[in-house]
Amino acid sequence: MKYLQKLGKSLMLPVAVLPICGILMGIGYALCPATMQGGEITGIINIIGFFLVKAGGALIDNMALLFVIGVGVGMADDHDGTAGLAAFASWLMITTLLSVGTVTTLLPDVAEDTARTLAFEKINNPFIGILSGIIGAACYNRFKSVKLPDWLSFFSGKRCVAIVAGIVSIIVSAILLFTWPVVFGALISVGNAIAKMGPLGAGIYAFLNRLLIPTGLHHALNNVFWFDTIGLGDLTHFWAGEISGDVSWSLGMYMSGFFPCMMFGVPGAALAMIQTAKEGRRKVAIGLVASAAVCSFVCGVTEPFEFSFMFLAPVLYLIYSLLYGIFTVITVLVGFRAGFSFSAGATDLLFSSSLPAAENTWMILPLGAAAFVVFYLVFRFAILKFDLKTPGREDDDRDEKEKIMQNDKKKGASGSESYEEAARLIVEGLGGKENIASLDNCITRLRIEIKDADKVDESKIKAANVAGIMRPGKTSVQIIIGTKVQFVADEIKKVL
Image 1 (tube, rainbow, N blue to C red):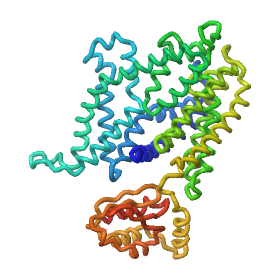
Image 2 (cartoon, one colour):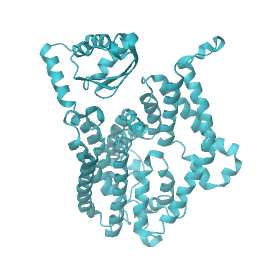
Image 3 (cartoon, helix red, strand yellow):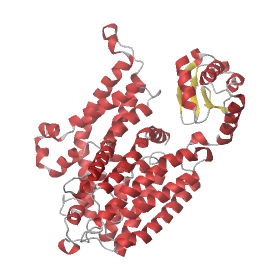
Image 4 (cartoon, rainbow, N blue to C red):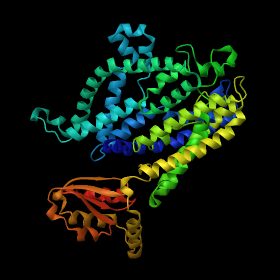
């Protein structure tokens, strides 16, 4: 669980980039419907809209790459950029070795198997990005200080990290070469079975669609239900102007349930997260999840919201996925039908409501209100009942708000907020730089490993106006600074 929480925290930096993508794309689609519906793009308004869509898409379409670098640097012991480079090398290695062109050359029979070919066409996904980031960080943490013989000394230390990551990636690619299409194919088989189950099947699909987001394997199911992999193609038939009488299922049933969840459920869940955040961290939570909720409502971009908590509180993400399944079943049964070409936000709802297969689109209001209330209540109850670590509720915030506020008042009263002076006092209080084995920081505190605990002088550390000191282990010291901890950490690193 601690490893998952560390992974979740490392994803915060790339996730913070995503909200602007959704906002840009939402505005762009509103200004230029042709980017979604097709047609000629003329006039200054349409051109601006097209420009904004492409600007937002530049990042959202390359989300996996953001995770590669974010996870690589975030999970490295000292957040060194070398780990990001190693992670990127791993990503290039894996995605190249498992590209359709490479795989069909190595295994020609794959080209004759549509399902296996499709699996490798979808290899550039967030799961592989996160996996590459983990490989890069793990190789950095293990080999950053390795010493090679004199004739290979140029490649000692950090220079060998990317090389080792590349070798590890070759091994991982060889394993995925045989396992990835099996997993992908299994999900397509599941999709075939679900398609025979009517509204319940639609709910199961929606549940699995959300649950598989972190792995990228949701693409397998999407190709079954949205496109024509097995003869369904809910999305393609909907936007082709057909109606339910033209197909063998209720057209739109595999898309409609996402609208109340993405447009109203996510904002409800976001409100619950904001209200349950620690008071001293509430503004941070608002900045992250409120903007993500806007993205979700306008154009159905949910990744900024989902990745903000899926690794910090995986149980809550399971509940979140279940709510999608439940609301999809309800939506199908009450007869609300809408479709999307990008995602289930207000923009797609507006444009799809005029298509022949659209039915009872006014019902988005009662369905949305219900989704908002249910998501809010369920999230609020689960977060408080199980003390889940959603944004603003991480362990680093526990019982620290009052200390940090008092510390800030002290600094304000003294008129001094010298990070250099604080760093000098902390290093001296820790027994000097020779006694410091490693230094890291989280959102509000310094995390230090020391060599000799007897050399630590807490009174000298407190002279730096810190909010508190903790000793969780014999050689571990945690110094509570507050939200400006990064600046103090940077100054300490200069001293070291």
